[in-house]
Image (cartoon, rainbow over all chains, first blue to last red; front, top):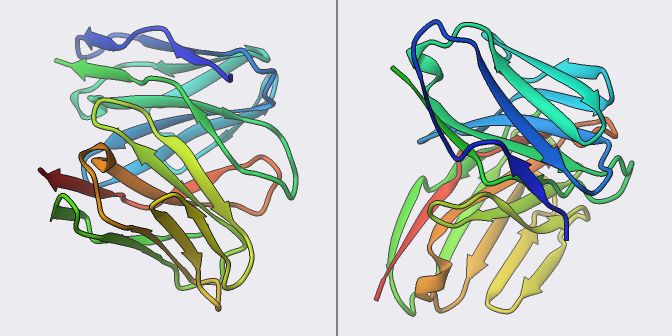
Amino acid sequence: DVKVTQSSRYLVKRTGEKVFLECVQDMDHENMFWYRQDPGLGLRLIYFSYDVKMKEKGDIPEGYSVSREKKERFSLILESASTNQTSMYLCASSLDLEGGSYEQYFGPGTRLTVT
Amino acid sequence: GQQVMQIPQYQHVQEGEDFTTYCNSSTTLSNIQWYKQRPGGHPVFLIQLVKSGEVKKQKRLTFQFGEAKKNSSLHITATQTTDVGTYFCSVAGGTSYGKLTFGQGTILTVHP
C-alpha cells in the first residue's frame, strides 16, 4: 500500500515564525502536492512538484514556498506565518501516468494553528 | 483552469434514504474523479470516469459522467452511518502531472 506521511498531526506556531511541514511518500511517485483545506472551500492547491527540484505554483501560492531535494520528500515552508494561514494542510502524491489514472494518495494532514 | 461546482454543500438524511451529490462544469471535462473523506480523515480515491455517459458502480454507490461530459453525479442507495463524510469531485488538468482541481465538497450526515 502507498503510504504518505506528514511530520505532525497538530502544530501551533506564533505569527511571524518560519514553519516547515514535511511530507514523505514511499511509493516512488513522481508527483507530489500540497493543499490546504478550509470549510466550504474544499481543497485548494498551493504548490506541486513533478520531479526532484522541480516545482510549480498552484492556485494559492502566496505566502508559501516548497522544496523537493529528494524524490520521496516534499516540504512546505511558511516563511512568516500569519493567522490567515491557520488551516488543515494535506500532502498528496501520484504516479506520472499520462492518459491513465489521476488517483492521488493523501497523507493524514497537519492541522496548523497560527496565534 | 478548469473549475467545478459541487452541490449541495450539505445533505442530512435518515439512514436508509438515498443521497446524490452533483458536480457541474461550464466546460467539457476530459475526466472526473470522486473522493471520500471521513470525519477527521484524509481524502480517499473512489473512482475515475473518462467516457461520455459512463456509469460505474461500487456496491451501493453509482457514479455517472454526463453525455456532454460537463457534469457528474455520485448516488448512494440506502445510506448507512458508515457513509458519513465529505464527498469531493475533482478534475485533472491537461498535463501528465496529474494536477487536480477539486469541487467544494458535499458533507453528508446520516441520522440513525
